[in-house]
Amino acid sequence: MIQHMNMVFQASGLTVGEGAFLLACCNHTDDRGYVIASMQQLADEAHMKERTARDNKQRLIKHGLLAAAERYHPKTGARIADLYRVNLDLLGRMRRKRTDYGPTVIEELTFAVPEETAGQTPPADSAAPPRQIPPPPRQIPPPPPAVSAGTPPAETAPLLLPSQNPSSLSGPGGPSGDGSEPERERESEASPVDKRQAPAAPEGQQPEVERVVAAYAAAAGRPVINGTRVRLRSAAAELLAAGLPAGWLADRAAEMPSRGWTDLERHVERSTVPIPGQQTAEKPSSGLPTWCGQCGDGGLNQAARTSARWRTLGDGGTGDLCPDCHPERVSAGA
Image 1 (cartoon, rainbow, N blue to C red):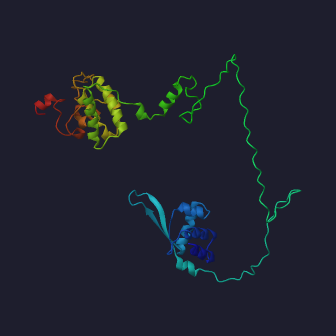
Image 2 (image 1 turned 135 degrees about the vertical axis):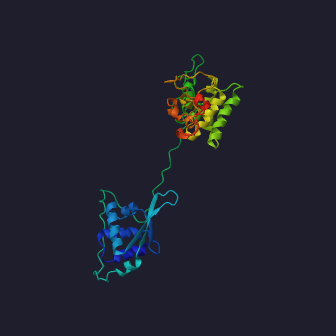
């Protein structure tokens, strides 16, 4: 408030830095002296560096002229503008005694006026408005000369219609005149989702494509946005056309939301889960049976590929042994 700033001007016992910082605080005070402002804002208004402003703040707190408290966002916990309060009672008691600074009557101050050029007269106080000169009459162009019957007219350039694209400087047909250049430009302006549309799946595979998309949506537990749905349909159609089973693809799609993935093709390429009906390329090492891909943390523990210790039905090597990977030990009660 301006009243509180005037109290700072009239106070005694303040250094230059303390007075400047206190003036910046009083620029935001309410009627009780509370201030909500950041340290950087107060430092800028006091025309000092932030470190100098912090030193002056601590001195004012030590003198009892200022109180401060840090504030944090109740939800995010982030640091927000601090809360200050100016001690208006103590500031009022620091007022200087009235001092006579001498007479305040001074001579009139004037400013230099640019010199006038030769022949130029200053305008009168009641000068008449300048005379309006009427525009010259519009001239009508003469008609074009008549073309004789035996002389063919000169070939002129065709009339170019306004382009639909304001940024285009070429004609309607582009540099080649066949319309190819604007077509490429329109393709470049299309969004990535518009460019990649799901290929038309055969009628028999359309329900299987939707089955894969539905598995992803059910695992995500929320509606799937249009861009992700288009990419899933496109990838599912291509993978189904390559001969992959629909049930196996649906299981792979259900694994993706929990890992934050949306690229079904890349996930399928990196998946180690065996494909039903296909011979696995994995060779057993040291007499170890082929890993079924379902045990060992639900197929997520890659250590189960080379170690029987992790081929259990529980997490982290705990639980019962996998009957598919240990048929002999399970049957013998090991």
